[in-house]
Length: 435
Image 1: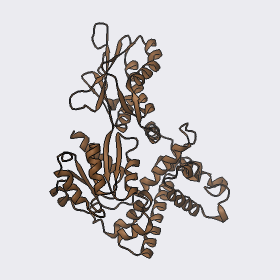
Image 2: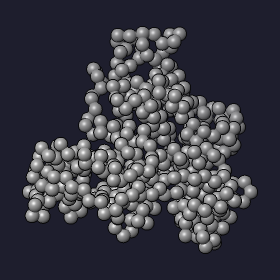
Image 3: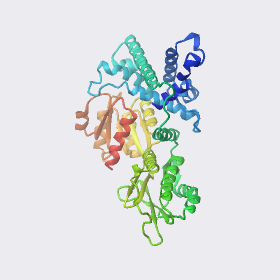
Image 4: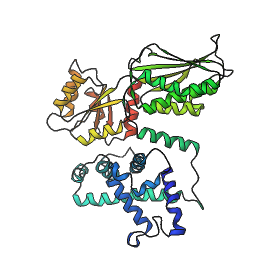
């Protein structure tokens, strides 16, 4: 991991001069790995406390010269810890109640899902004393993984510098980590990006034209969306000279009613494409490749077809209803889907879920089946048998491995707990393709 290279460079690399990776002395003569372990335990214990993490000693894992601010360093440190916890996940073919799952489940459920220790022990069906042993073993595993990675990146002098791809990826993650989703006026956003590009376009003899076939609101982070537009415009401006660059903003094609389409085209005065070579594929241009990645992160899509660059952006927020009696699970889904295109509604009872499903008409329903009172199986049947909600896809999200039962009762998909952000995004992407 890049961040650990920085840690070594900034800390461990000083050992010859200062004897320890934490300054000239560690508290009470603590050994370097012991101090490192203490800091990891402290950071994990405050996993979602940004105020605590933003000035944490382990934030030296990041490049402090970045202008993105301390809050992004805290979020990136959190991401490193979450990625390391995921490394404890065992082979998926093992039964979920197998003992090999315990280290991962202890770390994920206690620190990521923020479940109390007693609740985790009950779910694992182990005693409090056994839980404490499993917890200590899991923490040691996380510390060792981070430390071994740190040592493995050591070179005779300094760690190798970032590659260009590493830098782009890191900057992308920083942008996304601080994103804020809000309604935006498409006309203002486009004119702002075009205005920023006018001087460069003029120097290359290119006239910029914007045609608004329709105007309206899109949803996303203004800085991210503006960056996508600038990436496309700068690519086209640098790709040719003496042409008209026309940007058409209008209603999307059939099947994309919830998205707004932007079409970028270069033409000469005679209406022909001015370029001697066709447009590159998106993945062949660093500018367009980054634009594609940013578009995906805001719930959109960018591609090249028929010598045109097409960009689809969400013009409304899809509602995702999460039905779970554990508020921490609902909060986790909200964290996982920020800054995505979904608005997450939570229901902690079957009655509340049925009411919200009828009122909000969500795009998808994520349904737990182990709830007090009426269980999720009854809720599933009620949703599917009601003419108002029967066409809403329902995804069972449960710790139980009951796929066949779920599908037999009308479920449209199944995802097993514990759910990772990657699992959730992959599943939502599959359903987006079915729209």
